[in-house]
Length: 204
Image 1 (cartoon, rainbow, N blue to C red):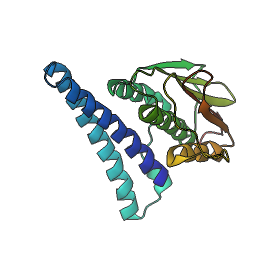
Image 2: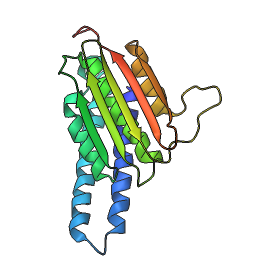
Image 3: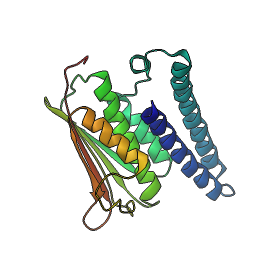
């Protein structure tokens, strides 16, 4: 539940802050662009509120949380890319491989990993960064890569452990499926995150 709340709020609020900043910059020169940005802020806020209400409703009801969480999936990743691009971060999406049936939990984890990686790029890469999201599937695993050419995040702790709730959450999601993940600066400039999630039997 804590991971879900973090992922929903961190991404949505980061996107809305950037969109609000962009609106302020063009407020006096391009009212049409301002209107589009404000509509995007409103849409992002409404979606985030809807997810948070559902999550908090489950806590109040004391129901089975795992069985009733909202489940965005890789099939809806285009909307995430579009939302991030509107926030001012150019993102190219590349999907490879044949469609594979994923269990709901793995599908949700894959989506959240992409979402959190893009949130980190929004926070750390800088306004001129370009980002590429690659998602490939085969009969054995889902492989996710999020690469940018921006400023990169500050170096983590000397012990090599992930810092911040976002990276910790991604590592936890990957570990849950016996997968692997690396995240760190690229040679030259930018940052790269790569995660491999082995496929589990559908329905487990």
